[in-house]
Amino acid sequence: MSILKNKKVIVIGDRDGIPGPAIEECVKTEPSAELVFSATECFV
Image (cartoon, rainbow, N blue to C red):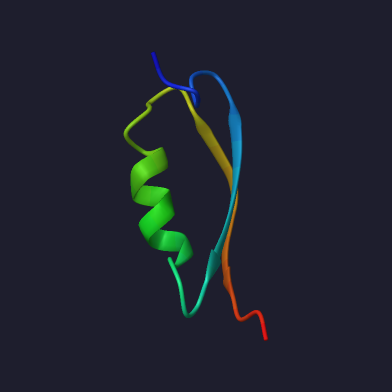
């Protein structure tokens, strides 16, 4: 059982850390999760 099952997901990645697209790939492993927003930001 996944903690993302039947959830809506917002992904905010970090340019110097883990980028948004990498986190998106992890979310895609749960087919019932809905990705509603994804971005990679630079936090300074």
